[in-house]
Length: 178
Image 1 (cartoon, rainbow, N blue to C red):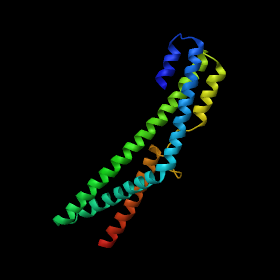
Image 2 (cartoon, helix red, strand yellow):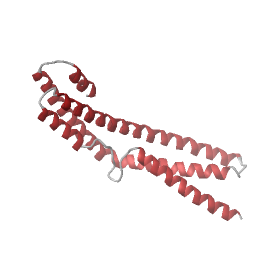
Image 3 (tube, helix red, strand yellow):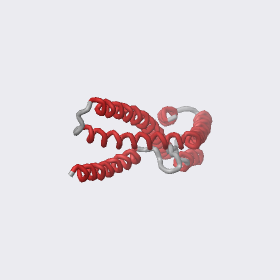
Image 4 (cartoon, helix red, strand yellow):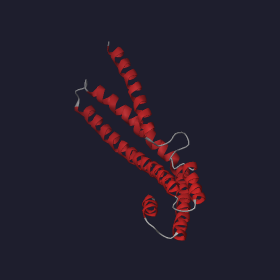
């Protein structure tokens, strides 16, 4: 969509052709936002569980890795390795989902920037461009589960929570050893 908008900005096409293209892009954007909202409704709960499990396993993996440094049995070290593999697997799934959600938001932001540049160049009817711009700005393309948005702020929040609880658990472990 952004490539078509950039092509409109640089070309000297007929005004009717540009307005038809913008109307089609506006309709495509409407259906794209509608499909994102539908995906949020359908898969939001599953995505929330995936993020929660990945973060729980990350915490559990880090704590069990800390505990395994004092354990010398082969069986328990293998168990720690299996937990690390699961943690990497779940965090890979979470990372791919978060990257795709972030890319969608970035493209939506880029679309709004291109539309504002088109308005300043008077390529076609300003009312049509303002309508499209309001649609892009007003309807968010953020992916969420209803409780939080899937973005990199979520990663930072979860990371700080994991570190916080890990410090508490390690302190309890040290206290119990003494």
